Image 1: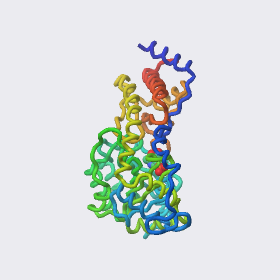
Image 2: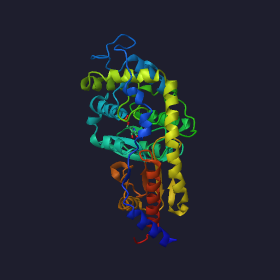
Image 3: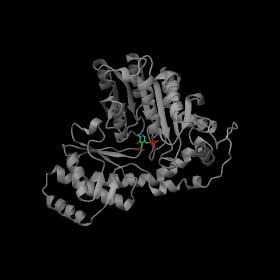
Image 4: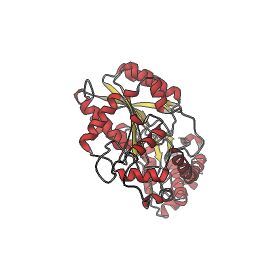
Length: 403
Ligand SMILES: Cc1ncc(COP(=O)(O)O)c(C=O)c1O
């Protein structure tokens, strides 16, 4: 059996592949779904008469804010419609608290810390790093954050100021937090401190490609638990229309809303209102956004099926893998500490995978085990080749074969 793996390695290497499955990007056929946006003609004024061609409406045109309100199921007065990047809104949220949080800006706290479920999104860790905020990892389970571990961190660590997570189709392991898990997070976090900030990166809010676990609207739970001022939810159309070319939205309230408006007022006079209007013309309402997402699902689902079919063939002793019902990623967790080796073997066979460790703060996966696979941004043929390479690499590293 091992000889067959070595032969496979050699023949894959001979193919001189050059495939990149490092980042979760929409593929061209997904982008084509929104091509009409490129030529759409729009009115030059918004619903309330604002001239879209000029400065003004710093927090987004009213019709875009209404659409955000429908999608995030939060009142329109709690919604800002902004530029194209939700990551930027998350950054602005952290920045606003760093500079201006009341009563103590985070910059005046000796060693501010954030709780971050792992595995997580590498850019979240980079962001916290920029501010010198320590990311404290907390394990993720199928139904969300490990509540006991979350509570323990709050009991044992000083200066924990917030948490940052992806509550639906978590990047990269695909968890959907249960309502109960979210309620517990809110109860425990807010009784620890009424300044504890919950940041939810809802990048995959409407990105199911298979029937998915039901989740109550986040804002509903936020309201019920009375944490509106301590919660910031961001999302965008980056994986709805064009990557980096959509609209971003934030839902928040009270102090947090005031802070984000404050930093944004210094930084940007107004978002691109023309692009917001184009999106409004294109979709009209949230129902149509959801219908559009079904078309994405049709294109994405077969790729996840291909990836699964390869992973299923791996011997069970090699590791386990996530089976997401939405989002853009699969994680493979090796049973031995060989993730770095697997990624390097893939590179040798011409397939680039996200560097091992990048789903952990400071790039340090304590078990050298978690590997993120992004199956969307390649053709089905390339994906099959890439998965053949990946599974071959896992077997070589697991059985410690000499190649
Ligand atoms: C969890 C998560 N948040 C944010 C982003 C980036 O979104 P945006 O383009 O809106 O900044 C991504 C993109 O991969 C993501 O996976």
